[in-house]
Image (cartoon, rainbow, N blue to C red; front, side, top):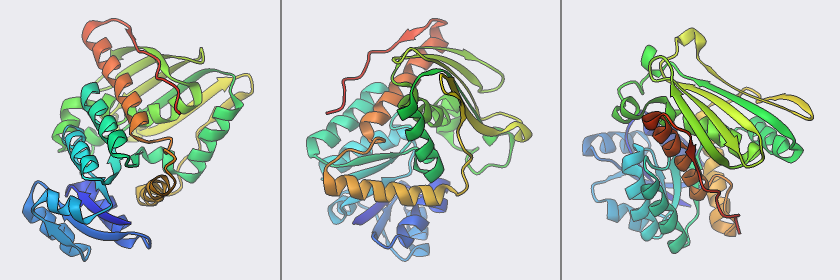
Length: 304
């Protein structure tokens, strides 16, 4: 599959570009970025070419991998889908529900495959665990703690303007929801309150009847950072296993997932439609924070 990369920031440089360059079943055609000098530098480091014209790149590839801020990604996803490109997208899909819906509609109308790169969903042990817990069922409650130290350490992502504006809710919230939703079902209502720094606490009611909590932060002390998901129910207690490989290995699997979805026409569980559901929960939580009320969500229609 011929891939183009949209983006030249730390995530694109450290993960996307090396994976696309090394993947045996990918032809890494080129890089487009909003900063042409950065695109040229990144392309040269991976033995591919920079593109100044985005439409030219879209015409030369079968798929694009997007490593750009979500407010930029959503519009480019529509543009790429309309050009017939399959979509490997980052989380969150967008920062508003209408923008996320436009991306989903564009992919559906064009008949292109999509995968949103929720890193935890592409870890081998983690994806197996999620499938096993979803099959077990009978969960009474869940708890997800996703505590990052992006703004309290020397993280390369600390300078990200969209992370500073949207905070942990939109950056690590998608990770927590990507685990809770497939196990506990759709969120039907959410209440959110603020903690220290950019910390947000969520209480979610799920369609299964279970309730879950999530604590999300990018301003945790480095010694307190980490991610934990715990479920309690009829079969006891289950804890999400820790990842034993990095984001590059997960992205390699996400590329393979997109290739399979494109070849078979069978949507991946982490497609743009799932990304939309995550955005809907995040937007509802943002509304809850602004109003001090519980926000209700409509239940999604069943997948075909």
